[in-house]
Image 1: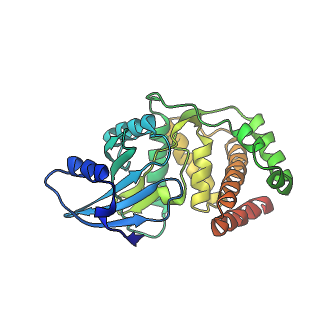
Image 2: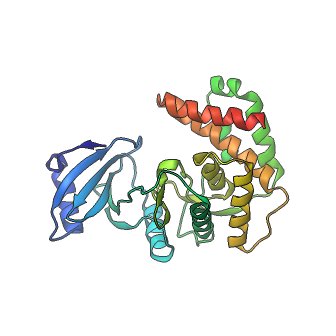
Image 3: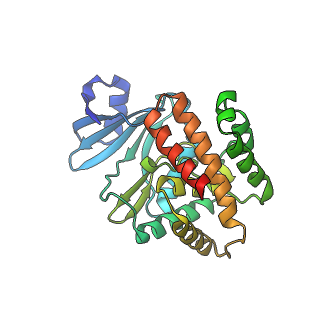
Length: 274
């Protein structure tokens, strides 16, 4: 993050903040430089903190509606304060990371939260990307580099039944905030109906889960769902993990994020070696 003068924001955006937080004064404003898709700002208002998001593309109204519904019914979901479709701006609670990692208790809390999200009614969410099509659309050069991994995960995507739910679809580490009260899930911009294993693969990747962690996560997840863990669960998740890694590596490489791409490549190599 870097210091930013709140007064430099567009007047209409400042008016939106004033209407959203009446009788309050912005004491400090910081631009959050980690995001690649939108312009994000941390606002310090009296004793509270808020996230101001300026969308660079269309406003994800269904996703914002869904996140607001979730926050009202499920603990550990970031709250949506208000949004303005004309200005393409939204205000959220800001969540500070209180601890560096995720222990067994927080893992259990996080997986239970994700399972609850997956079980929710769709609230007009779109259908998520066709994963097989997305993999096929990767650049020819990238597909040539990762030919064996692509063939492997495409085979597994065809081999097992789909398990559809309301997915977050962007459970990168930055969107999973460990706090004293559990792991808060933020930023539902890409929420859509899809196979729940895509979210589970993202969690496994975000926290570099080993085989023991994977088995524990699946047990917690299916217990929350009131179901028995399928015999194929570990192998299906492995295929989704490879698919998720390939999509993320390609995405970061295209945007010049070499360090993030290299970290994920090392995970892919580690997964291939087991």
